[in-house]
Length: 522
Image (tube, rainbow, N blue to C red):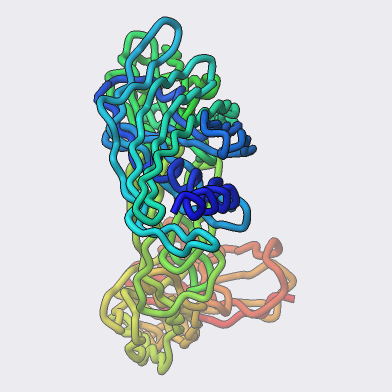
């Protein structure tokens, strides 16, 4: 029996490392601290050496390199050993629990009350076979963190039973690892601050990779922690004053330097435009105007379906094919240095219909009682303007009665223009000869006008009645000369100043009779 025990023990030399490692990593089960408020600077992954030794001569000293132990916040803290592959045996990740962390000197002490009893389900020993339910007692003898160095001193006692004999193997486990420097915590970039109407400040910046949160401070105001950009501060800012904010990136293990940004409060109002007007001409061009606004930097004009336009003067012309009958609306906004005004709308309706001239014009028979001029109704006409000899009359209906006396032998001309809402038509002329013969038959033989044709001197003689006045008209019906005779029966008339052509001499006698004679001026 003794020989069998010695043989088993010798064979265990080949597997003691395996048993040892099972004991070590079973040890690192889960480690929670009852100490609150430990700094985050001691959290993280420590990389170092794991040293194994034993008083048992069968257990050789051995050191494992690049072993990772992570101290992390987990209920509230824990220590985890990363998965390893030692001697071809993959070991899972374990946690060490029930450890108390307290501040001690310049560092932090790790302790654990009592013994941690674990059981290794199965161990296979060459030449002997498998051993089941191997108990292991683990004690944390000492632990300390100082200057980013983690030191652990543990003792593991594994009890194996060979045949019927229990054998206790005491193993000392020591770990020393260093916490690598934390990753860089970069400061924020592209920082911008804007104060709106002295009521609200908006601070923006680009997100920082690895940032946990951001701290925003301003003089006289408590720091504010935000998780993302932007930060909005509601406050009564004073016009003209400059305000500065400082933004700091906070990462899991460290913080960045501060970045400052400033903005000046501007409370001056940006007033909307007034007296806006819009007019569409011939469905081809729209003109929008408004009164200038004090303090305006520029104006923004928007029409639905059209890109906004920025202008610096209080007017805008849009060239476009507007559709007849449609209404179009423009919205105008004042833009000042720091803010913008509300929008003001103005509309106009496109009217592309032409203003047509009159047709079917008739002057009837101009007589002693007057002349009636008529024409056809023009669609879209608002009114009509009718003129003769420089005198213009406006009428709504397509008819006009001229109350003058229209003498026989004299030509009279009327000019008619259609007036629409936005424009006017081309003028239309109508010319007619007068038909008034009042007194002419009785006086025809008693009045002589000679020579005819004449080079400019006319002799006019009435053999029966005195002459009251004489008027001379051109072929267009315009009066070109008037002579007061003061009751003379005969007189000489000088028309040498008139251009060559045909004229009509209208003679009125003392009894009111009027006759007209045609004269040719050479």
